[in-house]
Image (cartoon, rainbow over the protein chains, first blue to last red):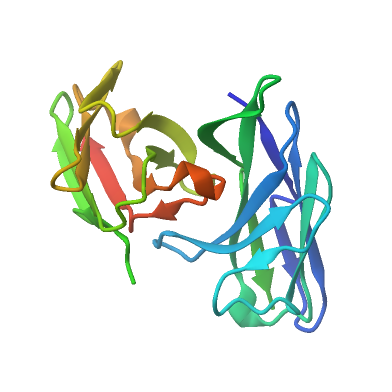
Amino acid sequence: GAVVSQHPSWVICKSGTSVKIECRSLDFQATTMFWYRQFPKQSLMLMATSNEGSKATYEQGVEKDKFLINHASLTLSTLTVTSAHPEDSSFYICSASYLAGARLANTGELFFGEGSRLTVL
Amino acid sequence: QQQVKQSPQSLIVQKGGISIINCAYENTAFDYFPWYQQFPGKGPALLIAIRPDVSEKKEGRFTISFNKSAKQFSLHIMDSQPGDSATYFCAASPLGAGNMLTFGGGTRLMVKP
């Protein structure tokens, strides 16, 4: 299957600082990437949809000024948690749509990164 | 509003047994139903997926059963193994929405040796 890489896999930061998480599609182009947040023993909650070359679409209740998303190329999307606080500590996961072949057919498949665990002290 | 309801929340199965996880959805626009497997500290990995034009799909020990009229689908893991112990998520999306998945609440499966 297609590979999606996230970096860093874990990060610890002080309250008030900003943290950037990268999501890369390694062997395919992804016009759309999704960012999820997962608390312990809970399901994945969609935070925002990241579209290459345009502004991200945020889900209701997600602060766009706090969670800055940039999708500068077809293989890279970044999530920056600004002025992080302990309640932002969570597991952040990105995913990318795989558009197959020259027809860019939507196969429906969504590939996930390994996740980034953020701990804010 | 929880659009995809998953049950049970946790499941314990003996090695060699059948694990069954159920999901129900509400949005009739959903037309893609994947199952994901997630190990602790890792991202979800696509296990198997089905579309509404078939009622069953089998890949190895994993089978999805789909009931369009009841808006339900389930995952069956045959000959369950300790290595299958993980959290399983069902999901659904309308393909036209660019694969925006709605996830179920997850099922923590433990397969005892």
